[in-house]
Image 1 (cartoon, chains in turn green, brown):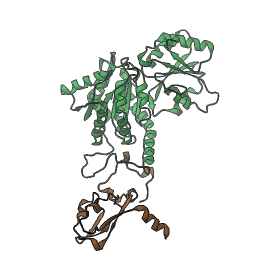
Image 2: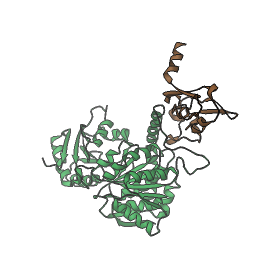
Image 3: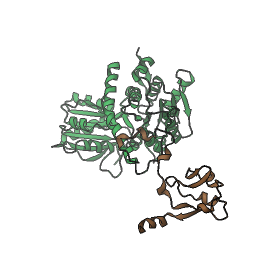
Image 4: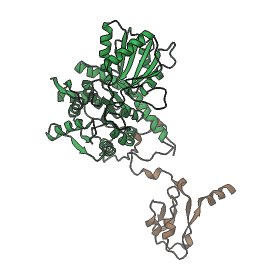
Length: 389
Length: 103
């Protein structure tokens, strides 16, 4: 039986965690993630879920506890934001290299400094190269759906990698919208029994986890991680399709919105996709041919599929909600340019940095920009939206 | 021991067995090498007790020499040796390297 509740993004993910019935959940508060674990702690306190909730003294400890628990073969989830994620950082890499199927929600918030609590994607991009699968959510519904799927993806034996689901801080985490939930039994059946690559509690088969790896083996172990990541897209696609059958909401690596005849295509991550779609609907009424490619799977990045769907677009505006200082464009645009490398008559690509530290992006900014770009038939390689010049 | 290719490795860099340090040769870590002088040895086995690894070889209750694959050259055995004329002497590894070169 399907249930629709009015939920914030934080609540939606807390429900997904409850439905996944993790053995262990590790929590440390940080804005704007805190309410997620408040909600989950309520479920534990009310006896609605039989999870060992471990409250730790820092995020470094949170990820360490998650790694320890997952290494015993437990299903483990945690959540964080921004500085908390930054403090976890060294263990985040270790979780991936140990191939532990941990699920973490990152409620995206700008990294200090200057200190700020609002949304941008600098925290997620800090974990870009950590070896975690990274999924982004356009709305709270997708955050719930991504979280449920994350458990199934992470513990697939062809993958065995941790999965990070991203949702925009405050914009999604603190705004309520209708979210359709699976019932617990259906969610459990969909995710299936937890699988783990090994267990420290298998006392008959003793193992050493995390031994020193000198120049004679480190390289080969990293190669095995690359291999696992390369197997992930197939599993993510399968899980997305199965979820689509179950719920009617199928997610691929990305979503194409009004792209077929578009003269200008935006590329975006997260909740901004919703804003751009709204602007596109309005512009289409006026005959302006604008489309959107909304990226759901950022790691692994689906280069060849993106190349196929973007190579014939005349003009692409890539929206980046974080900066890679010293690079010629933001992290998302770097990937898009990479995907289009070597294409004959490549599209004109421009990168627009927007929304840092929670600066609003509005549909009329998208419309104004689109009108100008379509009129000029060209796009500057780099620019900003919403910055006071 | 032949080094494994990446496809042959256990998942997550784990070591999927117990007691495996025996198969790891650490002789290259050594700066000083303990040299056994049998005529000075009183077979008290202090060296065997104090060795932090398992590098002192005992046969029939008597000290017989060192397992140089596992001795890291810490020198505790030589320090603890109570014989009036020490039965263990620490020598620089490079002296042995020279011997090999002179051959």
